[in-house]
Amino acid sequence: MTDTARLDKPFDKSGYWAVILGGSSGFGLATAKRMAKAGMNILIGHKDTGGAVETSIKPHFDEIRAQGVRLVTHNVNLFDEDGRGEVFESIAENAGKAKVHLFMHSIAAGACKLLTEDRGHDFKAEAFRGLSASLKKEGVSVSPETLKKAANDAFHEGRCDALHTLADSKIPYRDTMLEEADLQRTVWMMGYDHMLWTRELHKEGLLSPSARVVALTSEGNTVSWKGYAAVSAAKCGLEACGRALAVELGPHGIRSFILQPGITDTPAGNAIPNFDLMKAEARIRNPSRRLTTPEDVAAVVCGMCLPGFDWVNGAIIRVDGGEAVSGG
Image (cartoon, rainbow, N blue to C red):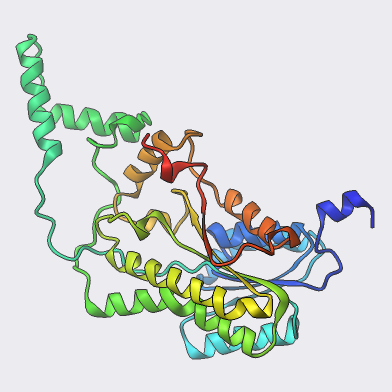
């Protein structure tokens, strides 16, 4: 193999596998494509309708296979014992002992609901009334309702991101409040499920001697977004589990990372209330004046799988172009 080929496909002929749960869209799919391009075989667990698989997902899977690697996919409920068992048995059968070099948990299945009824002060209505009164003093008569409509049109149709504080979101809060079952399910699925899978893969000897285990958090780990309480709780638990994995599996050569992407336009992100407003704010705040992309994150994951990342362990790594540290 030439040096150029080695750089382009660092895992070619290694026999290594990337196991990605939630690999049919967003960060998971982008990472699957990137690791396939690097020469790694791919096993994906996902849950989608049959129609979605045929119309929108299959072309992406075909693109992965075109890289000359093996791709195994399972469209199952990953939180059902039968589905989990099917995927785990497939990992053991296809990858085999010590060949899973990347395990990535990219499942977003949390409840984005308010804790209580939203009775906060209506600052937007107050702003439109104030602006209407100020315009009237200048001899221009425009009602608050007209100003509100103009702000929404300019934001949603004219892409005027700076109006995000005045515009109404097209992603409303759920009608129902957060219930205990929602919280329990969210914390399990997005909080410690990653740890349980990793522990089992290690126990069965399926992880490579220098495997990387990766999960995803968000800025909602420290910033309170309305309607994000359950997911925020899950992310904090996920980060604690990631640190525990780093300490307990580190002696075995396994490295644990939690990635914190910036605001990214993904199906999971667009399920968060007010996410259209959040994306606009992020485009303004980010030093590069754009959103993070799944490909940005996938490139980092691929780099983390290389030997040069051996001495990084237990870190929460921001992949956001400086978004989190920018005041806008």
